[in-house]
Length: 308
Image (cartoon, rainbow, N blue to C red; front, side, top):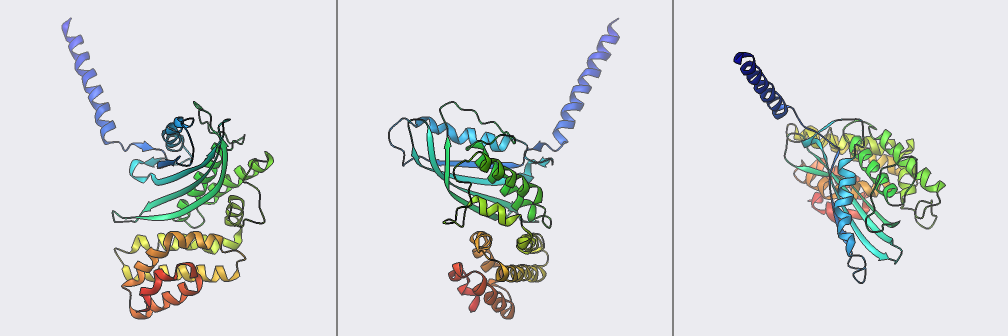
């Protein structure tokens, strides 16, 4: 009578060990973002808003724990993200005005290095956040707090996917555009196409979803996937591909009516582009300089080294 019990115990032990072994060697699936939030409340007076110390972990959980795409990410594939939030004012009814900067990075293939994909800055965010409020993702109803975050999460996803495949960010830019439509129907502040501000979230998503800027978006792919990702193995070919990418941006900008999306590219990439061509052959370095001198006059000081 003792043997069946012993066999059961041994079998059960092997079963449990097998599960633990399987889990140990099965890649853990994770959500898309590994996002860090920093909060600055220096401009808010008094201790009424001390509870905003909890805003950082609440927002990080909201972004990092939600599944934003249909893809399964490995832990090392998560998108590194930094969000800086500065509270400019707050009222007794827990209404706030703030500005935010969103930055994401992607790894460079075959290296331990990362590159900043995009920097997005928004100075007109107004929302309500009473103490103890929970953040709930809802794509059918607009909320000034979560809708703003959702909008930029999808914008960041769009930019990230564009670097891995041509126009790969389309589904996420479309989701950001859907949020814009919901915001406008609710008459929320900061979502209108203001004539006195040509650099706002309305202009941002409206321009990036039009075919007029497809060459710029394709250049994101060529710059990252055919340029940076190949740099360790074939530096000459990689530099040529980066040159083709900035040539494509140059041609696109010549036909465009707005510099907004191009400035976003070079705000993140100017110093990196300069470093890429710094050790190139003289002819290639000077060719890159002439393109950059015309296309990105806002960062000319970054390219001075390419003239030598």
